[in-house]
Length: 379
Ligand code: ADP
Ligand code: CIR
Image (cartoon, rainbow, N blue to C red):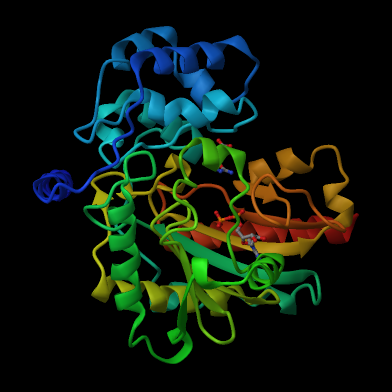
C-alpha cells in the first residue's frame, strides 16, 4: 500500500512535468542543511530532535533524499530554528518516514512511549466497550467547559508542506469539498474557503476555538503556511459540533466538539464522521505507523481528545506537569498549542496517539481526566 502511495506521488509529478506545470520541490542546499544542524547544536534545547540526532546519525542521513527531493534539513528546520520545540521534527513528505527512519523511529518511540513502532489497526471500540464512555458533567458539574476530539488525515498521493505544490494543495481542497457534499444529519454543513471569510469572521471563529490560525512559529518554519491562505478551508455544521479543517498542518482534520463534558457523545459523533468520510476518501497509511501525518506526534490514531477544564488549584501546584505526564496527558493553554491558560482553565488531552487504538486513546483521556477532577476536588 505504501509503495503504491509513493509510486502515485511520482506519477503525479511526472504528469505535472509533462503538462509543463511548475512543481514545488523543497530545494534546500546541503550548505543550508549543515547550518541548520550547527544551529541545533549551538544553543540549548530539550527537544527530542536534539536528543536523537547525534552527529553520527546526521552524517549517515545528510546525503539522503526522498524521491520528491526532500532532505533531512527540511525535516529538522523547525526544530533548529525554534530551540524551544518539544519535538522539533516534521516529515518533509510521507516517504521521509522511510528515508530517515532511523531518526523518526527514535523520536516516535520516545514521544508515544512505545518500545517498538507497531501501530494496531483502527479500532473505535466494541458496543460493550463504548458503554464505558461517560458524560463527566455528572461527576463534576460545571468543571468541564468543553470537549473536543479530532483526528488528522492525509490524502493518498499528496505530499506534506515542504514538498507540496499549490496545485496539489488545490487537489486536496477540491477532493475534500466534494467528499463533504451529501453528508447527512449531524455531519451536514457548509464549506468555507478561508480566502472568502472576512477578517472579523475569522477572528470570531478563532476566538470561539473553531478555526486554526497562522501564527505558530514552529509550523511556519516547517513550511506549514506557504501560499497562505490559498486552498485552506473550514467546513462545519450549523451547530459547529462537527468541523473539518482543510490544508492547515495536515491535509485534513476532522473535529467533533461541544460544550460541557460529554465525552461519549463527542467521541461517537467523530467515529460516525470517520466512517462516512472513509467511504468517500482514501487516506494515507503505512504499516506500523497507522495514519500518516506531517508531525510524527500525530501518527497512528492521529487522535487528540481534549477537555477545557477549570483546575485553578491543581494547575497552581509545582508538580502539575509531572502529574499530567504520569497519566499520559498533555496540558496546553486554551488557545491551542504554545498558548497560555486563562483563569485556571487548561486544555488536557491524551498525549500518545501511536501504539494504541482509538478506543484506548479516548479511554486514556477519560480516565486521566477523572483523576484530575478527583485531585482538584481534594485540594
Ligand atoms: P490540535 O492539534 O488538536 O488542532 P491546537 O492545540 O492547535 O490543537 O488547538 C486547536 C484549537 O482547538 C484551539 O483553538 C483550541 O483552543 C481548540 N480546542 C482544543 N481543545 C478544545 C476543547 N476541549 N474545547 C474547545 N476548544 C478546544
Ligand atoms: C514542537 O516540536 O514542539 C512542535 N513542532 C509541536 C510538536 C507537536 N505537539 C506536541 O507534542 N505538543
